[in-house]
Amino acid sequence: DPKATKMIPQYKLMAFLCSVEPPIFDNREEAAKELFSMNIAATSGADGQLMVHYVDTLVAVVRYQFVKKLGPEVGDELDVTMIESPELTNRIIDAYPHLKKIEKMEPKDFKQEMAATKMQGLWNKKHAGKRMAEHRESLEKELAAARGEATVSAEIKAMNGKELNDALRQTTGGPSPNFEP
Image 1 (tube, rainbow, N blue to C red):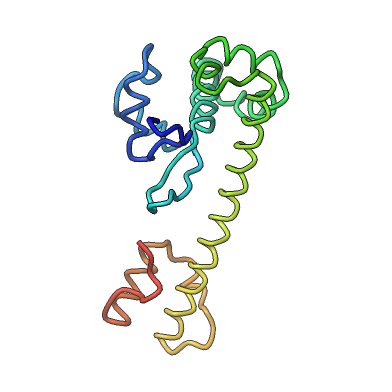
Image 2: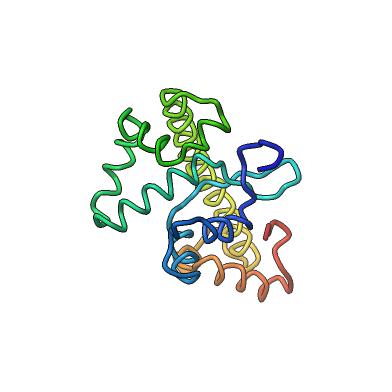
């Protein structure tokens, strides 16, 4: 982060996490699979590039390591513990002392930032889901209208995203004008 933005370009995230010593993942295949399941919130940068916050990344890696060692049942409890536990915050600062040097941040400040970014990630995830649902609904209505149906049929509602876009292409002769890759 040469410009101290606290953001990592999403496309560089896997290479970055694979370069960390000691290794977080056993191999690149595991990294690709697990990175997707870490569900790190991404936001659009000033240039439109997807970016992830370093705190979200750090929290996801710490959570991943605990779940990998102790099992998936600890995951939900760990989310709350990470925000509420000053002892865990201190351990993270001790394990990654460069964070304190970079940010000149006390553990309690790190705790507040971690809680804030966790809340922002949840908010972004919720609103992204809402936007996706609205977009899907508009595609369903567009397909129904293109087929001459007054309402969206159960068949259209049962389609996955790919099937919905394929059906639109077949019916209208091209991609949906509302389609955003």
